[in-house]
Length: 202
Length: 184
Image (cartoon, rainbow over all chains, first blue to last red; front, side, top):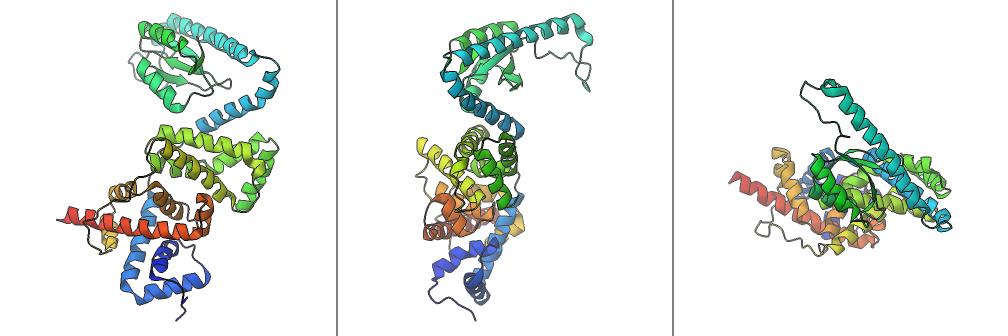
């Protein structure tokens, strides 16, 4: 029987985990396999660990950020890349962003206008006949501050009863929807007083 | 994706290649997110931590020296960020205080094989210290060797063996106790 004389019982038990995941090699593998063969208690533990590993690998997990996460990363990388140039032009990035928000806001307003003019026949593809509020009806276009975390943004949106209906765009802009005009006005007012979270809002 | 391919992407990222970063992210984003979210149980916080992890990877791609597998290096960053989060929120001292009333029978084969109830496993994993849980998860989600887990966690191999030994023991006791509770 192949054994490793200086391997303690505790070490063999610890290495069972790595026998279960198939990464144990060489003399250690031989020693642990021999110990398992000689001890039904260890053999049962090994079966339990293999079942545990299989269960964990089969487990469904929360959907990952995926392409949205990559878009967020690319936005921040672009910001970092742009910073050295911006250092020579104080205030330029913010101005550019505000201009982008204004331009996008104009687009949203136009969309709302045309959506209104089209009347009630407008509906989502595949939808039923129930009237559907277009996202632009009570929309806001927002650029969040680079230092704002997901948790901060989530808390803000929940407190203002806003939902994200589009974004981030290539410019890092999000379109938010409020349930009605009154909520939109209130949200706009609050967001304008939160520069640490909201870089610009329209 | 093989280690050599990931290493090649890192080299290109060090030169500012964002397409390489996109490919690198797509290759590792899901396992990294699973590793983080399994400890936090909050997908939004996990998304923020993952964001920080990949920003760090982008910034430090040129400093990767190839002394470990790329995946080990990446999980090392994710591990440190997650532990930092726990420290900030005072969770790093969670104790492995589970199911002490259970007897020593490791008859957990029946626990899992007979019932296949993932919720028991999830419950018992939740009771472990973050460091112990990470060791088990890197072993069972990512099939890492104990040497790779030691590199990722920045501790000696002996420490990982100790963590795995205790984590395994507590998990099996917890599962056994819960299943006995179900049966009785």
